Image 1 (cartoon, rainbow, N blue to C red):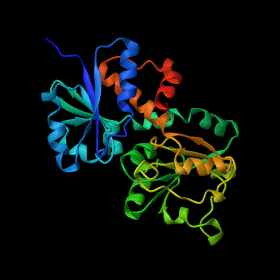
Image 2 (cartoon, helix red, strand yellow):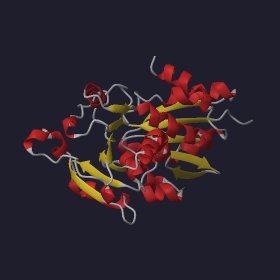
Image 3 (cartoon, rainbow, N blue to C red):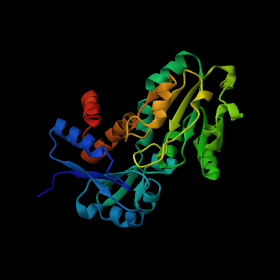
Amino acid sequence: MSLPPSAGVIGWPVAHSKSPLIHRFWLAKLGIDGDYGRFAVAPERLGEAIRALPALGLRGVNVTVPHKVAVMAYLDHFDDLAAEIGAVNTVVVEDGRLVGFNTDGDGFHSALKSWRAEVEAANAGSHVHLIGTGGAAQAIAHGWGSEITVYGRDLAKAERLAVASGSAGDAVHFASLDDLQRPSSDNAPSPSDPAPNNRPARYLVVNATTLGMLGQPPLHIDLDRYPEDTMVYDIVYSPLETPLLAAARARGLRTIDGLSMLIGQASAAFELFFGAPAPREYDAELRTLLTA
């Protein structure tokens, strides 16, 4: 007798995760008798938890902070994309083997389709200011294909991530997060240079850290240094209105919240777990559920 398909999410902490709401919503819409839970796993118990997935009868788990890089040491295999990125956010049990994938990049970029189209229509270049050096930042930076600056507390990590994200001909930079937090009036760097080939530049500022999450200190950066057409994207979704997004909206900048990436990456993971495409036609209803 086969058990109903089940999956989950692991992290430390994980109580804030909205992933169970998303996957259970899609399971119900598709009439699949399955479930999806959340599991708090301390870093020192990660190996035990991952290796127990087959015995627990789970199809797999999503992996959130702080485990996205560390989990790779306990897997039997990971796909080429996860290997290139150097981080895993989805583990699937395949014939008793633990296989890692990374769906963060797809989830992140799916929310930027209209912005990219605007940049292209304006014959502009794009400059990405990516804040963070962890697993999510690694997926976001991978193969970006334009100018990118990685900001972090650890300059060595920021440099490694910036270099790894670049392709031939791309401009990659790294800098201290302090540079963005100093007031622009204090002669801090200001993004005023044109894009390559002297095209106008469109800026995208991305928070790929946990700063601003419930229980964490806020991320404060000086947004006055950026042009009025800058887009600010915060992958934190709890709370949905982070201090960074509130400051961006007060400045009149456009914003993208963390639910966009969360739903996008969950969609790819759902199909890996349950063998059916997520019913994305219900996204509006899902967003209402997640923000209630």
